[in-house]
Length: 553
Ligand SMILES: [Zn+2]
Ligand SMILES: [Zn+2]
Image (tube, rainbow, N blue to C red; front, side, top):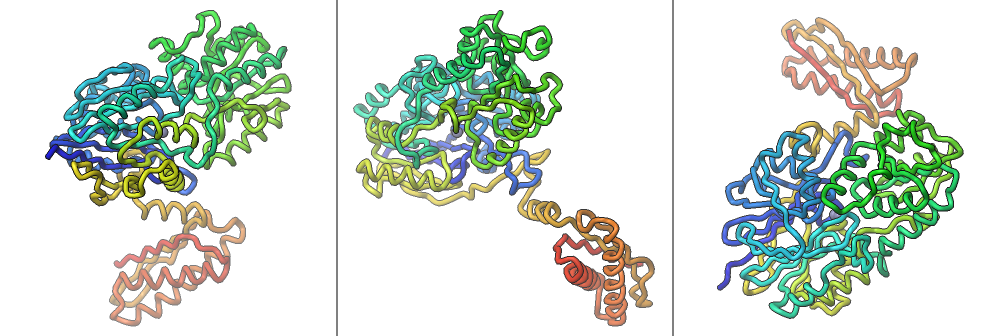
C-alpha cells in the first residue's frame, strides 16, 4: 500500500481569506499558502485574522517548507507570524518572493526564511513532495498552479485562478499541461478556487478592461486623471501606464505600496514603463496636472489610504477640484461598500468627475466564474474534488457545479476550516477536524479571544460604568465611596444626576448587604453590580458594561 497523503485545511474554506493548508506524507509537512484575513467592523481593533497556525507550530519539527502560490495577502499575509515560530524555506515565483521578502524584512524576519524561486514548468522535490509549477492567470502576476506528484497520484491545486485567454503578459493558464496530466497519470484529487462559483458566465479578460481604461483616459483630455487600483495588480498598472504614454501623460505613483510594487515589478521584468514616463508623487509640483496619470491605492475606502486622504482634503500632495477625474479600477470588496460610498461622496463634494465599475467596465475579477470552473473540471477530470477558497455559499455552489459536471456525489468532499482529509489507495476519507480556530491579531499575536472581542463590542456600543467602594466587613460599614466613573454612557450635564442615582442605589443595597455576615466580598461585588445595572437601565434604557470594584480594608 502506497503512503497516504493527509491534507489539513487550516483556513480559507468558509470565508474569503487566511488561506492555508498543510499537506503531509511520510511524516513530513509542506505548507501551501499562509494568508491572513482582515478584521471587519464586527471585530473591533482586530488588525488581522490568521489561520489556526497551532497545528504547524506544534508539529514544527516535521514542517519542511512553504509554497506560496501568489502574493495576495490572503495567501502570504500570515507568513510573518508563522516565521516568528519556525525557520523555513519558501518557494514561489520571483515576484511572489519579492513581495514576501519585503514583508519579512519589515519585521526583521528575513533570516528565518530562505526564499527559493521557482519558474513556470519547474518540477522539484520540496520536502516529501514532488512539485510541478504551472502558470495561472489571476489579478496578480506570476501565480502558480501546483501539481503534487505523490505516491497517491497527482494532487492539483488551482490556486486563485481565472482563464484569461488574452492576458496582458501572454502567460496563459497552462490548460494543456493539466490536460496531459489528466491523461497520464490522471488527476487523483483537484482542489480549486470557489470564489466566483455562484457567478454564471465567464470573467472578462484583463486586456478588455485595459481597452476601456485607455479610451476613458483618452476622453479626459485637459484634465488630471487619478486611478485607484490595488497596488499588487501589476497588469492593471501596465495597461494604465500604456494608456498614459499613448496620451502623453506620465505615470505618478502615490502611496508607499504603489511605489514599492512598481519598483519590484520593474526589477523582476514584469512591468514595463519607460523611465521618462514614471515619476513619484514627490515630483508632482514640477508636472503639468493635465499631463499626469496618478495611480494610487484606496479604492476600498481604507481610511489611511491616499485617495481617502484626498477626499477629506488632507492629502499632503494633491488638492482635488473640478478639473480632476477619479477612476475606481476595482469593485468594492464585500463589507467595504459603505466606506467606498462615503469616499465617492467625498470626491463628489470637490467637484471631481468619478467613474467606477458600475458605470464603465474598468475592472474584472481575478477569479474564474462558472464557465471557467467547468472548463478546468473538464480538462482536469479529477477522480476526487474538494472545493476550496471561498465563503460557505461559494463552496456549496462549486460542489453543485461539480455534480452538474457529472461527478458522483461521493467523489466531492465538502470541507471547512480545520478539516483533515486523507488520500489513500481507498480514495479520500474525511478524517475529522483539528479546529480551524480564528487567531486574532491586535498588536501582538494570539492574546485576543472571544471574551475580549465581546467586551470591545459592548464598550463600543454602550460604554462603561464603574462603581468603586471601600468597605469594612467587620464593622459593616462603607469606608469610602461609592464613586462612579463612566465613559461613553451619557452626555453632560445629565450625567451627574444619573451617576448620583447609581451612587445612592449601590450605597443603600451594600449597607443592607453588609448587615448579613454571610456575604463575602465577592457577593458584595455582585450586589453592587446589580444595583448599578438596575439604576442605569431604569434611568437610561442603555446597557453599558458595569464594572464594580468592591475592596475591603
Ligand atoms: Zn489571489
Ligand atoms: Zn485568494
